[in-house]
Image 1 (cartoon, one colour):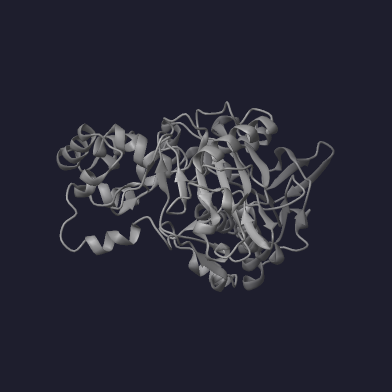
Image 2 (image 1 turned 120 degrees about the vertical axis):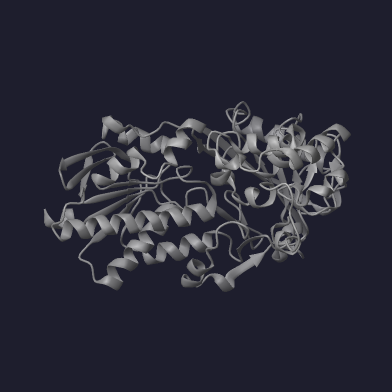
Length: 476
């Protein structure tokens, strides 16, 4: 029984789960702690939405694709894993906007498609004169503290600051749901706090231009590894060898006693643990947490499915190659594709490739119709869009479809307000019972958030287990 009480069970073998396992493993070794840990993954492979394929000797990420250096700094973590020198940075300028009819490439400095400096709004080629006037006037006269109120979403903040047209045609396409969540459902500080730095004040002021230029879209703002993001997963998995259990689907979680938890697996097996770290998708977690803490139900999310199509294309067949890394496409267009990236234009290792390698992303909140169709139908729709956008004169040489069902959870704005409270009742009550909840969308989205949250969950679980070991009350 004592051995069971000293076990930490990590549910989920994605980036969050592997990061949590790595940090727990490190704490056990460095502090000589008497604990053990296991990772329970319900699939036959780890990595979550990180999926790297090999094509003609090139590593291609067809799920999560890159880190953004403008977000949280995780360089120390990568250095610790020995991956800092394996980085490759993006090149080829920035993504340009394809509005369904024409390519709009603004030469001004932008941040996620929006003018980095508001005086440049007059140079935005895709906006009407009325939209430019509204954006300029809003930036001067509207409240400076709008972002402080969690009742306003990022969408509200940007509309009040820059106007509806700027949000729809310049901002929204550059903020994919699977990396940032929905700007309509998240307060701006949780969505992207740099928006407050850039647009939260009416005037930039002297000496700020050079500082803000660090945020500008373009070459060098994204990075991956020479062997793709699988390099990160492999490196983390190496440190957890012998602790990983595959094809272990969690069915339910319950208390055996005040300091012991029971995990039902695959409907016929069970495991006991002193604490549990949850890193799975909230929709999946809701299934096995139902009834665990009825007085504080885990919030239910509405999830979006997303997909990627990979194309290998004869270079001679492309007549409309983007000047930058590729295209983003606004919601208010006739196209289902949300982003088209030409890897040869983005990553240095692809520069001399004999073929063009193109990734097309699709699927966003409130647009589930396409993703629910059969694979071959989706493939035909996306392929025809790529042929039109790139003006192809022949069929792609190879096409492969990847789908992630209900991968992007969305919480309502009211739920977000509650979750942002310093003492969030749901998290507090679960933590008192040794259960630490994470997962995509709980505290944010994207690769950087996955690492930060994995580290936080590990720290909380270790602290709880130390309290148990010292016979202190974890509930104190």
